[in-house]
Length: 308
Image: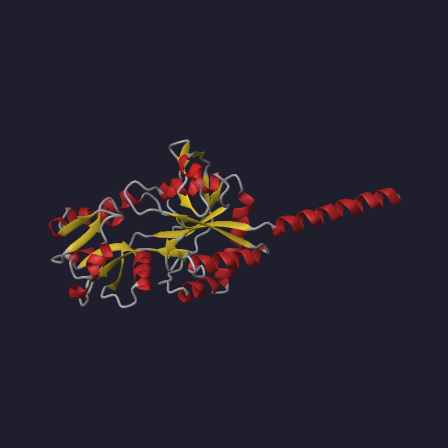
């Protein structure tokens, strides 16, 4: 009987130790190093941004220390946020990627088996060369809504915008191949085409040109306007207050092979949202915070745009 009690006691002790070890394991989250006010990693300055403070709040709820893996996502026509996130997760650089746009297109199984890693903090020359076998992505519940918004230059700041049609007559600039490009080019069977100038993402400074008055308006993700305003508090461009009806929620994405983690994160997000903490963290970071909207995962964006 005594031997049996000792065995049971040891089993219970090992279970407690295993749980403690699991709890002490860092929660590793990948964040873009240059997306203020969502996330920013600057040499000699403390890490900052909405996604940074939210990640810390979630780690605290889970009783785990936070470890951020910073990476660099390039804004160009060849970049793929889906493949970058998948490669980081599949390589074990992190267990979650924050600020991920939740769309059906961004969550489908990748069409290729491997992908290169984006540049990340601590990457070696070999890391930049090799390819990573990809997994399948799984989303968390959303924590912020990220719509497209019309941003106005100094010469058009008084223009009232209630619909895309109100941009008629303005000098419009848009980045080639972007979602905003598709919306403006297809609006009302191409009614705005003659007023649109296409810029090259990653090469041309869209918001800088708008700020200088070279163009009158553009259509971009609300987060990019917040980012520009954070870096240029004296900017001459202004938000119109108009949000395009089709927008995406943002949340975390992990690997489908670890559903328990997604469940834990969803529980923490649900508690923080109910307490109003997520909205509070967004406002503290200078984000134009909008709560998630239905549907949680946006369907075929391009089809919806063409059908409008």
